Image (cartoon, rainbow, N blue to C red):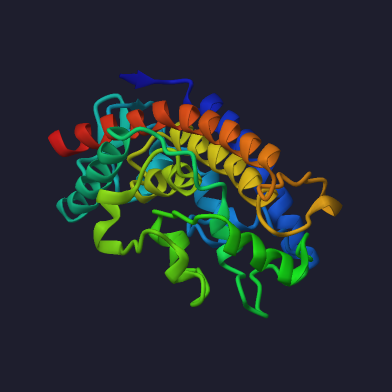
Length: 279
């Protein structure tokens, strides 16, 4: 498929993404940090400049797009420029992403964790991840919440930040080696990680899909931190008090909504992996 109006698509993508990258640039130039939104650019390694860059995805020929040849993934073909075949060295990544996402897609969402991973990251510790922001219930109150509720975190990249005293309290002891066996679509971090798996395949993922995954990660991150032990009301984030029955009900409801939003994005990534493997 030859596309001649690709510049308009590129510009629309850049305008969309700048809603997130421009405030980040302003914060960095002013030396300020945001405990909710900076996570998307620090924990996740995709640079803002890469997020702003538009790629059409495989099977698209861009007319009059010789500038794209500065990137080694592209090649000249009759009618314009297109992505070349996926390098063999990247096939293991594609296969892992497909296996992980397919396994998660085949499971029912589990909604009973209530975001306690963030609480377990500060349990019985003087060091907190966001030291500029107070704990809503204080140190002792936070510890009591962790001790009073069952913890079942299946996401290794959340579990690995648990404090040492919190780790034995988790009913599961996830490791990197059992990631495919444990991840499930109700987990907030599994939903956020769709962004990671999308950019891991850059530039072979259409930038519209990368941006869709980023937007989902942004919205999930807001709930993740609203349900955390931190008091972020000064930033306009109303707490979701998971230490109460009402707070847990709200968390589970919003968690289910995110699982529904994530499902079609996961399916698109799986389909893309299958295309890349078959090419």
